[in-house]
Amino acid sequence: MQNNFEFLDLRAFLAVLEFSSFSEAARYLNMSTPALSRRIKSFEEAVGAQLIERTTRRVAPTQIGRELMPLVRRLVDEFEESILSISDLRGRHRAQVTLASVPTAAFYFLPRVIEAFNQRFPGIRFRIMDLSANEGLDAVANGEVEFGINIIGASREELIFTPLMEDPFVLACRRDHPLAATSTLPWEALQGHPLIGVSKKSGNRAVLDHALAAANQQLELNWFYEVNHLSTSLGLVEAGLGISVLPKLATPQREHPLIATIKLVDPIVTRSIGLVERRGARLSPSAMRFREMLVTEWRG
Image 1 (spheres, rainbow, N blue to C red):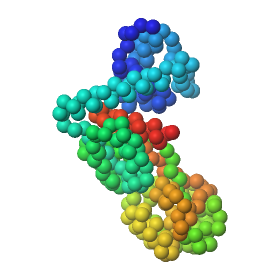
Image 2 (image 1 turned 90 degrees about the horizontal axis):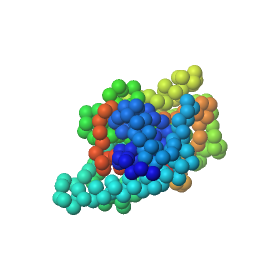
Image 3 (image 1 turned 45 degrees about the horizontal axis):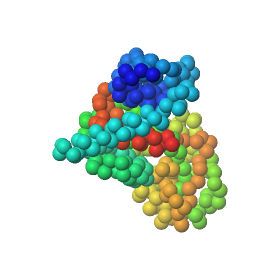
Image 4 (image 1 turned 45 degrees about the vertical axis):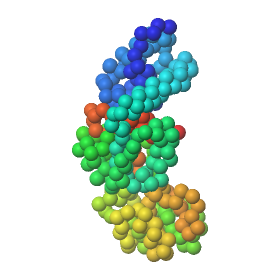
């Protein structure tokens, strides 16, 4: 094994396996796909073995690549942690991660990832803007934040959207409501009941309306109440004023004494939650490490 490889070769190796795609990894590392391929080839030549199998259908590690992954990850982590620590000791401005997040992700998901991140990098501060989907896109596009967690973004050319998970829309109703007697319901069962929905200007409402229209559903849903925030709809449900359709991530994550959550089918409607970044922009080292932890946590 030769030792003539660079740190970016290691980052390239991990990125390709993380995304299972050369093109996605290249976008993440802000380099061209041919340049990324040269990095991988250089690393494989240094190791003296093929590390990644690349076919028309998939990108996957070879046996040697799988065995090498933990070592490379440890080397990268230790190096970057050392760099961040040295920067802090030299009295430079304290590092900060800035991001915009849709409120549901900011409330239910971000705290546990930030806690894990702070244990490894205790000197890094956070500035989190909990914004609506469209406001979050604007914050990323104009550089107010480094990246965002959002439900939309692929339609704007200056932004890159990396899907992380699918969040299904579900029904929330009181446990004493007639619809709470089953764990699964078709959308047509909601007809005739007063519904609590978010504003038509909301990204969530746009996703919902588009999906139902695409499924050719001729439903007569009674959107009796309209609110701006998903948390408000849960308050109205708890008061017994109606039932609500909302993303599962916005519902109580533990069993609630008053509210039941019911799966909706025919069709199953989901929203894609993912990372939004400016095309061609480079993340700071702190933001890049936090982004990697988000991807690992979400996809894990």
